[in-house]
Image 1: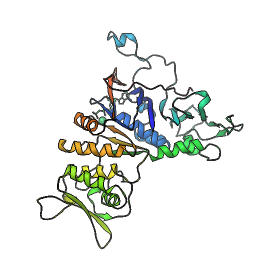
Image 2: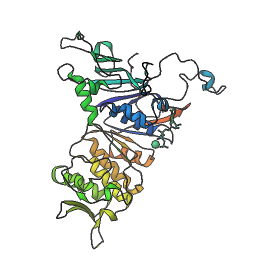
Image 3: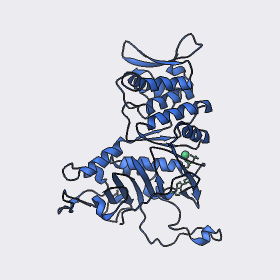
Image 4: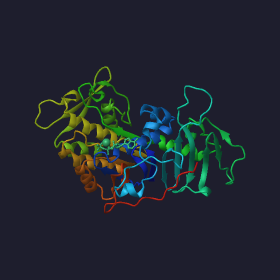
Length: 391
Ligand SMILES: Nc1ncnc2c1ncn2[C@@H]1O[C@H](COP(=O)(O)OP(=O)(O)OP(=O)(O)O)[C@@H](O)[C@H]1O
Ligand SMILES: [Mg+2]
């Protein structure tokens, strides 16, 4: 389980260290930085698939995603007697992302490239530092793999540093370009953990949405991001997953209703909802946006192949408030099998999740001088200890 998530200099997340539990609900007012946190976690996951540099480019490049405020917020600014001013930076600017659990920790530090030969790609961000360590906090003695620019050092079996440093490209994460199970099995373990993280965000439910199309079904233990394989995913849960939880989830939301999947001659799967009081089942094209979106969450949350971490962004979108307790119960069921982070600004969902799972922890974000900080509300966990690798 992850116990800590740390972000520095990513948009409004100037310096945020979050405590995570088995089920964490992250909330806060509009603009407090919830979506930024969700995106930062996705970026971390992209790094393990060698997609971090490309993902940053899609967001407008590293300079635009970096914290746009001053390096430090002085007393005059805090007291309101002066506006924030840019000063000469004393530290190098880097986008830093990391996490730790009881077993392992990982951190990366991306920065602007060192000026070199003439190339059109001179703006590509570079990995400056990357570390994998054992235990919850980065310490010199706990380092297992340590990257400084192009050079990676790893710990040998006997605990000494390997004599031959390895060289890798500065635009690739060591998780992808240096994952040799014989030299450093831990790097591989960390990479596979991160790769198993799953993110779901705003399913489309309009008339042309992938989830409304009837298509060939194959066994689907993991719902696709666009929900296009919804019927197959629900049928997979029915056949090899937690069928009782599936029926409970439908009954909780739509009392008396029943799901079925009609398989056509040509192998196309059509999802149908039999509702109390209707003479024929409604097909997926006829379901309301809220109903369809709820069923998408059912398929995502009851996956027969749960990931190490499941992150949900604003799952309440377009759901009627009466469906929130059912959604919260589903989230609590999922959290029994996988670690879950729910990002939401809907107070009723926060309350429903807390009612459905007594061990759910709450993280509240707020803005302080433009930077996202942890609000110290009652019952909120403290900021965990965290150290970044130094450049
Ligand atoms: N590069 C940057 N530096 C500093 N702040 C930034 C930067 N880019 C965006 N922001 C700030 O981040 C905030 C947006 O945060 P975010 O989208 O995460 O909010 P949110 O909590 O998801 O809000 P909502 O509930 O409205 O979706 C804005 O206030 C914006 O000013
Ligand atoms: Mg948002």
